Image (cartoon, rainbow, N blue to C red; front, side, top):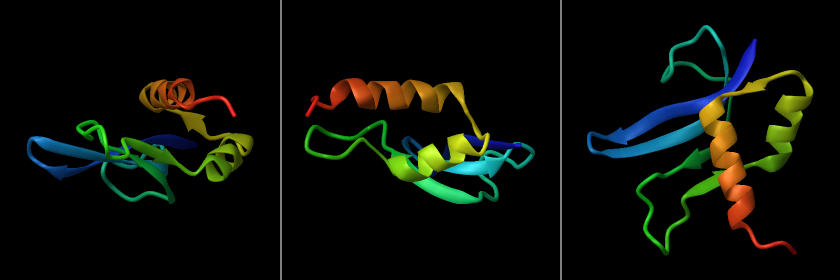
Length: 85
């Protein structure tokens, strides 16, 4: 099964996460199938905190990938933060 989850990077005390599609059996920071975006929890006001390739996210969901609860929460926060066009 494929799951969309966070993969940690960055230095000690300065976390940075990639949003990836990976096999459920792989380690958190191990091999992944595709990088879908990133999340920077310590982004300043003028920096981008989260970016997701929506087309690829839609594709992976359409083929049955499950989204982790944390990524689901981040996606909802991003959608709420964007102004409606």
